[in-house]
Image (tube, rainbow, N blue to C red; front, side, top):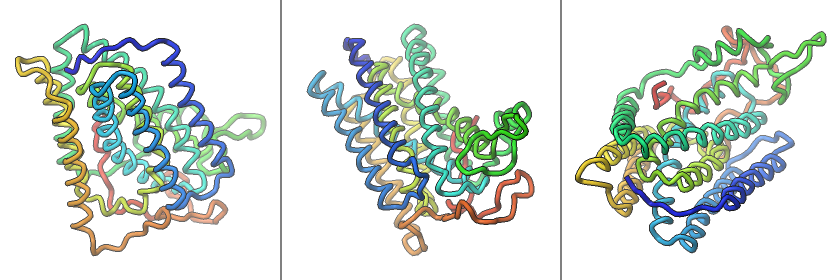
Length: 352
């Protein structure tokens, strides 16, 4: 375990949290018109979020030195890599419910806010457990290794958002109209507040991300239990998740072997966590950074080389659904039927 420790004044926590809130507000204002986000716009926003995330590492370096900065970068890279798997499942959720492209950003925006809140809770709980009860490192490590194994062998499993227990519970408790009503999550019918299909999609995204949050936080906690570094690494990686989705949605079918790389990263994090409580001790951060960088590079390059002859649309997201189009309802959910934008069904990756 990396026992990197330094005092973080309350005003620094407040400043970073406020900065994240300001960035979310800027992103919301920039996309308040619900326009369809194309590849170029998504790439520019992704570049901005990545630059901010990398820039924060330089601030840490100037403030606390190279060890803090390199530890942050290791956490940021592994969280950024794992977020690509989120993109696969989000694409399938949007495809299943046939969410018009113009409304997907709003769902992801509120989904990211929920993701940040969930991660903040898991970070403090997980860090406290690892610091107080050393044996929890073995449990977290075994969980990460098992999750990596499941990710590697479950490539052909299908995702069924309508079967998610949280989604089913919400639909039973809250009156729901199985149709879209613009970008509204709720409407009023005869004086009663009713959820729209877009709200059901948001619940599906949030419920899925809860699963992602557990192993993502555990993977970063395998690098360090410093809550400030774990939180900022997660936050700055997740902030760019929306833009990453629109940037990669049309290319997902080419990432056929990426899940193997992500599985290796999760298993590596698990082994690292277990070793930290043995005589071997913590693995060096440079080694961790090297393993993460090489694994991501090899798995993406392997995927792109293996699929270089396949057609892919990198100019826009794959499904350009007109929000006002009159399409046929999905037989089970009332959503409009469409072809999945991500190609074949990809596993949820992280078992619930």
